[in-house]
Amino acid sequence: MAKFKLEEATLAAVHKAFKSGELTAKKLVEMYLQRIEAYDQKGPKLKAVITINPKALEEAAALDTKFKKSGPVGLLHGIPVLLKDNVNTKDMPTTGGSRSLEGYVPPTDAFITRKLRDAGAILIAKVNLHEFAVWGESVSSMLGQTLNPYDLTRTPGGSSGGTGAALAANYGILGIGTDTVNSIRSPASACSIVGIRPTIGLVSRDGIIPYSLTQDAAGPMARTVADAVKMLNVLAGYDPGDPATAWCIGHVEKDYARFLKKDGLKGKRIGILRGFFGTQPVHEEVNAVTNQAIEDCRKLGATLIELNTPDLDSGKIANDISVHLYDLRPDLDSYLGDPKAGTPVKSLEQIIASGKFHPGIEKNIKEAMTLKHDAGYHERLAKRTKLQDRVMALMAEKKLDALTFPHQKRPVVPVGGTQVERNGSLGSVTGFPSIVVPGGFTKPTDTAAIGVPVGVEFFGRPWAEGLLIEIGYAYEQGTKNRCLPVTTPKLAGEM
Image (cartoon, rainbow, N blue to C red; front, side):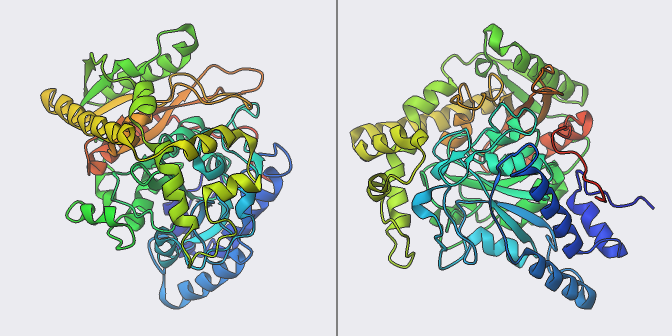
């Protein structure tokens, strides 16, 4: 019988090892804590982890006792999860990456935190993000800059870059990201992992520090599509604490794992959103990886249709239609100002006055203070409705199951740079679902031994998560593009 290996371990492999007695939840947590100890503030110094759960080993031991007595607690029994530090935890600080919230412990768990705990997951650590999730490099005043394990001179994408880097480096099995413009899919692309941005309303945002409730989504991140899907099973569903989830009634699958079909690309019609590709020399490597992905989809049975859509421009969608900065102040203030919350700062204005934030977000948060829900805001919402209709009409006219494009037109930026030419705005502004899967790598360089990861995005209609899972899983299984980073190798004595 094959022995359990921690490297690239999956949920299924862990549960099999629990069942055989080869592994316990406590031993699993111990091994991941050793990796965090070896690689987060030492070695490559990835700086992905803000807080380690001090009770992780205690919780794991309790789950082991329950397992011996009555079997697994739930679908995620004993599975270590990396939680983005804008998701409330009643027993650990939730900082949004900001020193203005340093030490703040919320009175209650977020809805998805409760769902994870109820399913038997162990929240091993709270991980870094771009402060308050407002941009894409994953730098914060709490921890500084998280590094990309594939190229230590580059960012891991963001804002959920702590989750992305930690999963890539094997700090845990599953992770939570949030996504207002690109923020689940950007680090998935940059860190050779899988990220699912669900339809708005499929997963509750209650208890998550908000950025823009018009566009915010929370979703699973993992090294494999199958693991991300098993996590989605736990997260999806109605929550009275988030009215948007009322829209998911009748649309939630009992088991998204039924869409894990190796032949899932057969018969699918996928539109190539060619306008989301770059046309300059700087875009060539990403274009080459994405064009290979298109060929692979063809070989795996899909029909690919070239689309000519000059009116769809991801940059213009982000700059001219997205309302994220307009919503930041009122939505963040609603979280901070809740009298039950007991936060040390009560508003964005107080955060700015405190000076306890990374200078990299100053321009955005000060701009957000000047924006109002005025005529310009409502004009953007009207354009958003037109965009939703335009995309639905395009897919209907061409009889498409999904659209595809590179998540970023060029590789993720070096440390100190600002993310550019990302394509996530189509999903976030429409609120429609998408999945990013590993597409391959750029050419190796002195700083990137195997190259920089490139993610391929598949985008669908509202509530089409099942279709996207079929496509993403078949593509993943047919290509096996994910590779381990060389900066975080197996430790001595590791299983």
